[in-house]
Image (cartoon, rainbow, N blue to C red; front, top):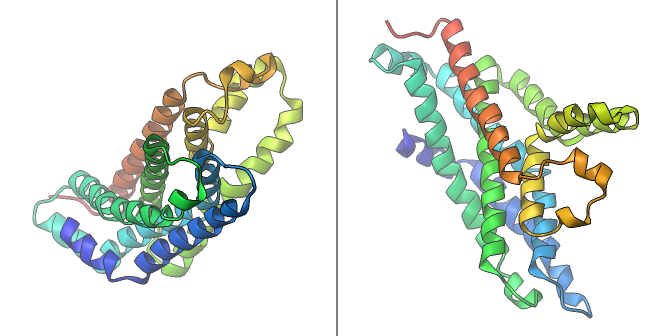
Length: 266
């Protein structure tokens, strides 16, 4: 299955689009820092690259997961595998592992190329900061691949699937934040925990929070008492919670949907 996904992905336009967007956006973000009169820390540039990536990387990962899963149904590959003895659980798990195994190296290689200007632009290049950035982008990717697989399990028609993918992307990028901003002025102290849980249920918020804390962009000691109530002191807790809810949850739902659609192992 990994070999099949490898051939399909690296021969597709999605690979070129993904690598191209990462490299071009990274260079556009990093090169302007070279013209500044004062030395700029590498973490400043890496944070900017991450914030730009948030607008397209989740969308591309969702597209990849959704269309790959939908094609398994449309091309009748899934029923054939099930008929040969593979269970739905095994298929979904193997499919997810295959997609992650193929997609993650591609984005990591693209980000390494995108970081080429960093050596000449920034005063330093701490490998541990790039490692934290890489971990954050990988986690964001694996979450949205799982979300895409769920969409592909539910929907087979391509135009409808495109609409749901764009709607999901807009929800995470804009609509959730708009709703939270509308709710925020009415949040009392007794509601703070609930607000924080809902805020950090967004993988974009959770992964960004993890990266910013680990890069010391946010310092717990500098927070006000009120803001301290809005945050969780452990970014790992936020991150692990998101992985369990989104990855395990969406994969479980994908299995359930496929079984209810009548694809089963006799």
